[in-house]
Length: 176
Image (tube, rainbow, N blue to C red):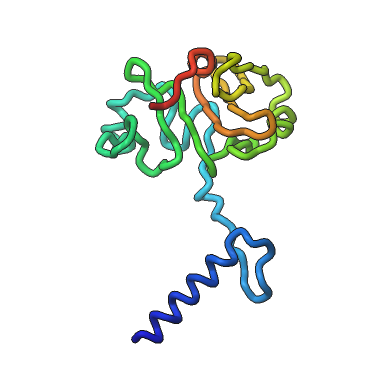
């Protein structure tokens, strides 16, 4: 029994030693993350959640969860996404990696790729003396993506109604 436990622990330690250490040794195969596991947020929302949906409707459908410790309601099955509601309507989604836009933009994407994917993107500068990120606002009608960045890479992606995304940037609020 102890030999089995030792073998299991040794295998775990071996696997952990390869994490982030460069190329995989011969014979080991890296399994890519399934495409379905990588969420897509577009300017309508998510597959099962649309901008403009009410909190009541999402809760009735079992998508909105309020029983989770956090800074507000969460979306069932969307751990890396924080919904923002104004007057009972979904107006913005804060998304984290691995969630991407249909163009493949996510946290960690170089801002040059954002500008190439959204040529009409508008630069937003964070106020001097704050610890806030600059932004790139990619607007399409009344919807937009707001990409918060450090000057090199995207740090956060926010999608939703353009006016609310711009207001969020100007006023400096987060999902909590």
